[in-house]
Length: 71
Image (cartoon, rainbow, N blue to C red; front, side, top):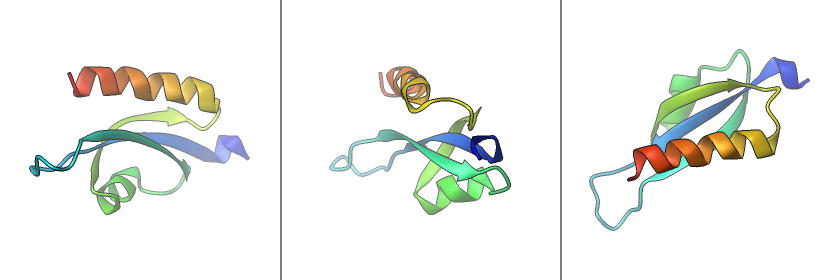
């Protein structure tokens, strides 16, 4: 079933200084629109990875993107 999914890593950031920007990850069905999914969560897609990635692997990807985006 994992092959029918994908991981979407997205940035959620607002112009409000009280809200911390976040890099989040979510597993979606392969046929779901990742741009719309990120938009509905208030975010912007940074990267899409195959559903075959483990949670540990995708967390490493998320942390690396977070480090690069939120310097």
